[in-house]
Image 1 (cartoon, one colour):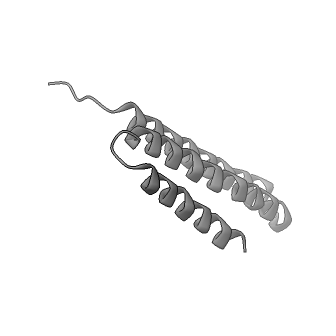
Image 2 (spheres, rainbow, N blue to C red):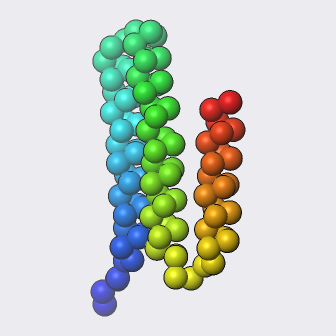
Length: 90
């Protein structure tokens, strides 16, 4: 019996695996540098990765559901993501 995985779900999952791998790599760098100042620089660079992954995974998900939901709901989803990003950056 074969399991068929939707392309959108696979893309979203792969982006999350990539994001997690970047987080682990950043933690290893922090330990390697053994400096609070350098660890803060590495941590600050992660602040760019998180929102990008959030936007990309949401976009893939919405594109995957585009035939099933209305344009109004798609706009509400992107408005919600925008609110999350604005709230985090404030």
